[in-house]
Image (tube, rainbow, N blue to C red; front, side):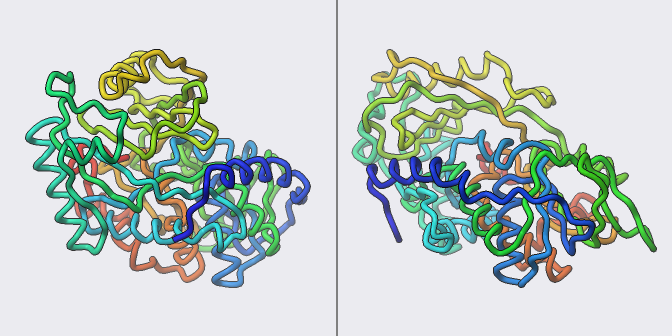
Amino acid sequence: MRRFSLPTLVAGALNAHRSWPRQWRDPEPKAYYDTVIVGGGAHGLGTAYYLAKEYGLTNVAVLEKGWIGGGNSGRNTTIIRSNYLYDESASLYEHALKLWERLSDELNYNIMYSARGVLMLAHTVHDVQSLKRHVYANRLNGIDNEWLTPAEARAFCPPLDISAGARYPVMGAALQRRGGTARHDAVVWGYARSADAMGVDIIQNCEVLGFTRGSGGAVSGLETTRGTIRTRRVGVVAAGHTSVVMARAGLRMPLESFPLQALVSEPVKPVFPCVVMSNAVHAYISQSDKGELVIGAGTDQYVSYSQQGGLHITTHTLEAICELFPQFRRMKTMRSWAGIVDVTPDRSPIIGKTPVPGLYVNCGWGTGGFKATPGSAQVFAHTLATGEPHPVNAPFTLDRFRTGRLIDEAAAAAVAH
């Protein structure tokens, strides 16, 4: 496993900012592409990369209505883990985590993956029972996870308050040491640069306005703000707005869109060694390579495409963080934001075919999209190239909402991050 020192990580970030504009091709759309990916975030760009690398499909276009990485890929809290309870979820996220571990070498681009560990706190007897169940289930699936006492949790994360009088008493914690973080925009640039080098066209400022159909109702093309593009295969990976895009193909998806909030503090010297999550108070925190404390909150309780969210949720999260880590009470917030997440009834993704021939979808990740990025992209590329699901994404079909074979990870884990 490759690890990077803090100076190396910072240098990588600076080099990414300097080098990216000089390496960019901005092509005009061609009249025909074998495959079109709708959505220029990390999942979409990664899908294009694996189509080119593993299946030799390079007559591919990635269409983005804004700029690449300008949606949820640039609006997340960078957490990576695979300690999910259900077999299907654990398999998908572990597949992704194994790809994360070697992604910098594969792309020849420092995506700043840092296996600093993800610590999940237990505050009640129910939390203890639930997290221990996760530990045992993960071990049965060959996934690392271990139970820590409060003292061991404090030793792993010194800023954590484990005093008996704490508002949220720490009764133990589950630790996945291979979990950690990566830099979200670096992942976008790494996939984009590699896909671009293999001949994939990445077309920005190109919104999909409608779909055209051929014989048997199959997809035959797209109407966009940059003209008509003919194609025989379309993969939609438009996080937060999938239902809007799919409605233009005449499909109603089992999705709702919610703002998901996060914020960062002013930058400070390295003070926080890992990622800490608390399902009971719904707050999570890590420190970025620039020194900011990255703090995540929950989804709003109402559907919306707003990229701001409700102040009361952020306030609750900050109160919880200050209780768990009293030394941060005097720090200042630098900026806050909200991404837009697609949520399915069982809070698990949809990856596969749709009722429209030639139209595929990868959506519904809720709050778990970033950590799944390379795994999601690779299995979706397999599905597009072969017309059949990869064994990892076979359970995550749209058809499960008809058969009732749901994968309700959120109900099992209390939170789907």
